[in-house]
Image: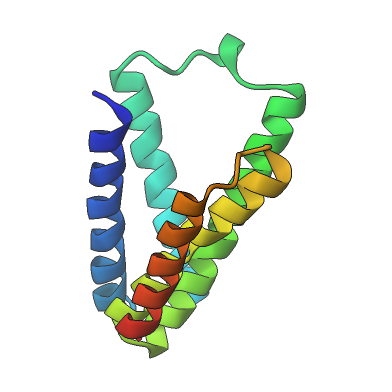
Amino acid sequence: MGWIPLALLAAVFAALVAIFGKIGLQNIDTTLATTVRAVIMAAFLVVVSLAFGKLDFAALPHGRALLFITLSGIAGALSWLFMFGALKVGPAPGVAALDRLSVVFVLVFSILFLGTQFTSKAAFGAALIAVGAMFMI
């Protein structure tokens, strides 16, 4: 499967995370909910890795790769702590719309740190996303 169908599936499941999270947060602390979610995700991913024969301890990342995967995990955990905090008190569509501003931040960070070329097309797309997020809230 190519990157576009995979990215669209990621978007669908990200939307379901917001909906299911909003429903599940009604009578629970957001940090506890995020912790439970992370444990469930970890267990699910271990099962998937085992089922597809992908769990190879000899191939585990090390060095720089491990550092950046660790930083990515911490950033993801912080993202979900803030997302669940926002979902607890805010409307799911508004929270999700602001969360999608991450696309704009990815553009900026990729230009700064990955050498991605800045184009007028990308700038226009980022502006549309930002305006759309503002309209959603």
